[in-house]
Image 1 (cartoon, rainbow, N blue to C red):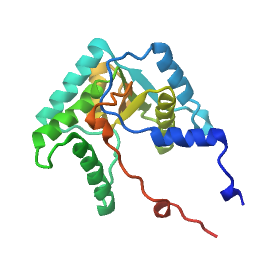
Image 2 (image 1 turned 90 degrees about the vertical axis):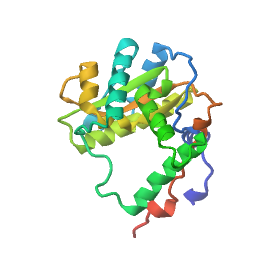
Image 3 (image 1 turned 120 degrees about the vertical axis):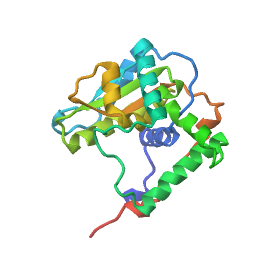
Length: 232
């Protein structure tokens, strides 16, 4: 039976790579060479894409542009000024089963940091780090053309995962930052992006600070029986 056959060396290496990848929220101040970043993005573009449309763009933000973006996002967050999002991510309303996963993920993060449940100031301070890309040497803003349908998001998602795995294979770490999607117009204004670009997420990328407590955060995945069925 094929199910009992051992994994080939390459397959085993991929499984190890996928298991090693995790969201990193503290980085070493070691720069990532541009040539390496370009190599990672080129590899990520090998992800499957319907009709080979290859949706999505990656904007590396640094220097004054990065400071301008982070300052604007942080101020908007502190002022609690809501902004219309380009797309919906969370179900409305959130089902209880998914809400439990969301709470468990937050508990894992703040537990690793030693932040108490009622310490709203510490939690807010940690959340603000999203807008500074967790201090990573590489800050990416990911967008997709507004004319794409839902399938474009699927293809871009595969490309994003490929990028994170490519980074992991080179010894780098990453963290996708969905918080940027809460302020799409601020992102476009700060960076001068066209209105045709939907802000999908941000991404922090660099060398992991293995000593940082926040990087001990781990989340559980659902057991296979919860999401896989064999129909005959």
